[in-house]
Image (cartoon, rainbow, N blue to C red):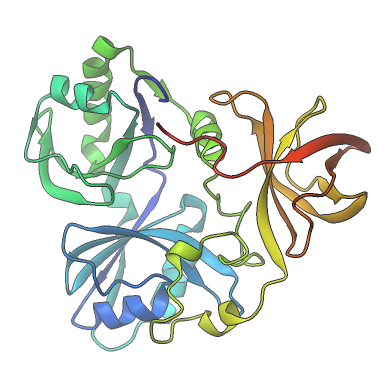
Length: 318
């Protein structure tokens, strides 16, 4: 994915449609980001919060029309998110869980365009990040293609009817042979998002970790009218997400204690090797006043491993 291209089946992700004349007002209430400037064919990243600011989930919003949005939600949260969205529906708003109808493939890496070229497509591939075209065909299969991904690399995500997913996957796999593309699993996807310091629900954010603490300020518009959780997010935060590079041998696993100047200041949320940059890294949630210039370490099963403060993202595409 970093040098060529990789193909992921991410059909486990959930898709929830928001339809109706009040869809815009409803979206403004439900998510942290502002959807006002979105035009049809645009995507936007956002978070849904509880009243206490904790994250219900992080979502990708697709706008089809003023009265039609689609939310991409994390697989393990689909039922919870659908219930949350349904519970808060008002006016002319329909919340429809269409997850079973969609297949979703992520084609990621600098050579993704060569794979699409070899597969054959009709329509215009979105060139701008966070845009989509829902009137595409790839290898003769109707698709929605968006210029999005969860790898820190350039690429696209393709949505097709669930029954077409295997056919599309096989067509792309065949088309990718010319650039040595490989099929990739969720372990590779996790390493890629970790290198790019992208948060994962249940690790960097959760019902107990709000998006401000998680460092997602770019996706939170506190100057827009009221949204669920806004009041809590306006308060001073007591924790922050940081990056660490392990200097000593070992791997920092989630929930390992993080020490600054010998004192426990937080816990690891994700940890592991970052092959694209070399070395072992960790993301951690620590006290907001922890000294970034201090002496850092993680405690793994009683063994203290020295670390150094590492700016995020650990990997940035050239």
